[in-house]
Amino acid sequence: MPIRCTAQQDESGMGFLLRSATANGLSLHGLRDLAGLSSVRTFWCSDARHFARVLDMPEAELQDLLVDKGKYMGQPSCRLREQPFFRTELLRLRKPQICVDCIHRSGYCKAMWDCRLYTVCHLHRKPMVERCKSCRAPLRWYRPAVDVCQCGAYFRALSEGDWNQDSPEVVVATWIAEHCAEQGRDWCDDSSLPIWMDALSLDGLCTLIQAMGVPVTSNQRVVNSSLASEPVQFWQAVCVRAVERLRTLARSSNPTALAPTTWEGALEGWALATVSRADQQVALKLLREIFRTEIVARFGSQRTALCQMCLFED
Ligand SMILES: [Zn+2]
Ligand SMILES: [Zn+2]
Image (cartoon, rainbow, N blue to C red; front, side, top):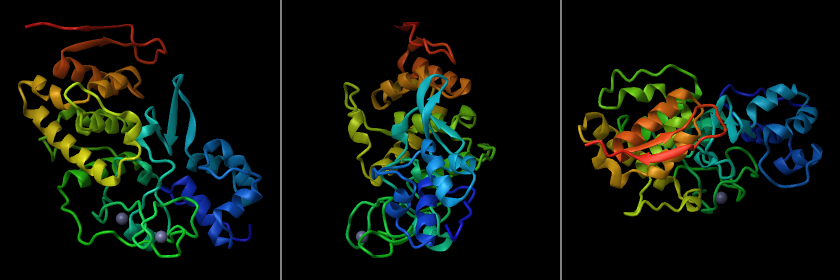
């Protein structure tokens, strides 16, 4: 390739491939053809060697950029840059979203935009865009350029105005950004939230927000498969409900009051597959305090779910 792009530190792998292709006058399809890959799809870490050859760059560098679909501690997982995820439904790997301001200013796609709960740009405090304002089509990775829709229009913001820095959507987006930048978090300025939140991994944080914010019916049913097709506005509402309930939890002396609105199945799944010991302790604590449920699970073991029992301690 005559023009070799340098990947930005927080760039998305698919975004980098698209940017490298267009810098060389190719489409992503053209780059895929040169790499010898026939199917039109999202590319993973395991595809890095094909593209590294065409782009004349170290394979390891491209492996770091692309999402790794593999196993982590024996369980199916995804790795987005340095962050492991057990719940791939927390990521939007096939349906990209962008911040229009970021993309027009910096010209690349950020990896953290692939987090479903990153619903507002934490820098510009504007909602993430998942559809073209001109043709209304959902964004795709296969498009003429990072900032141009397949209809030929430049991406534009769907609505005007920016959001308050304290709005829950911006708060959650900032947490995700801090995780992705691997900055230490400090909740001291927000004592309204549970103190243990700063110990969570990104997978844990997103799972917690999902469990506290996704609407559940009275018999605790959530149609899991349809969550992936919910629009960005749905996930903004999830952030709002979750932050509000986490604040309630932090000051509550009766956490069981949160049981009807908390997704127990998500907490159980989290307790049985966590990327860190701290995550697991939080998941078990919440099940115990909100639902009076005790799950016996050993961290790092593939043989989890040994037994489950309800506690009636009062
Ligand atoms: Zn932005
Ligand atoms: Zn369009």
